[in-house]
Length: 105
Image (cartoon, rainbow, N blue to C red; front, side, top):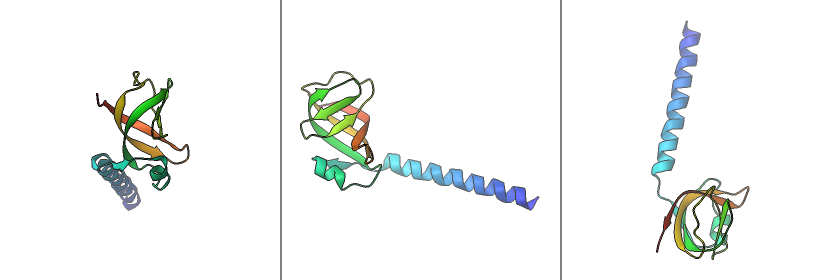
């Protein structure tokens, strides 16, 4: 019936829209962040690029010399190393969730 066709079309268009938005978010260039103040100005779930020296590390967090806290579950040890991180900023928890970490030296 027409009602069932409309429900199926709306589901297909909704899923296609979510897929397209996800691709745009993944492809977009991250914003370069240098301080905690830069983070406070960002909208929720912004893609960011942060570089710095690791001054403290626990099992799930990394603290950079710029006082920016990165959430990274089961990360290898980066203490006293210079790293670059691509991640998403979570304003509610005031931290960045790491997607990819690259050691500089």
